[in-house]
Image (cartoon, rainbow, N blue to C red; front, side, top):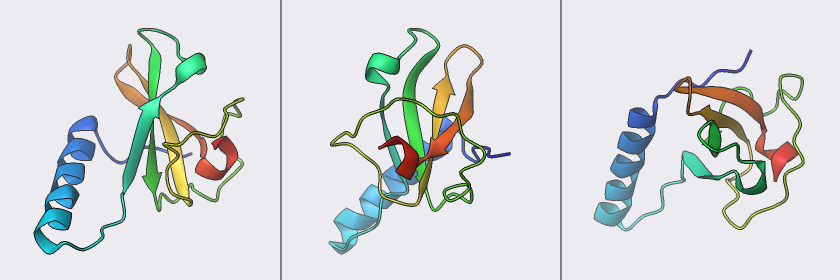
Length: 103
């Protein structure tokens, strides 16, 4: 079973720390998280956004996913990521699929 090991607060905090590291070192830090809106798959007030975690243990585990008809996007996360949809009503992440099966 694939689960999200981070909260929204964790994602925002880690993202800010990585952005500060990039600006302070002028180096490149790979994005750990990518997120975006569900577009035509959105269910208002329930499922509105996705978040992908680079290097997640389920990234190559294709038997624990919910297939969706989702087209490629310019905001696509890096390969070897596993993606989740956020359930706004229940305030939890739901496993979706490896990035390679969505984008």
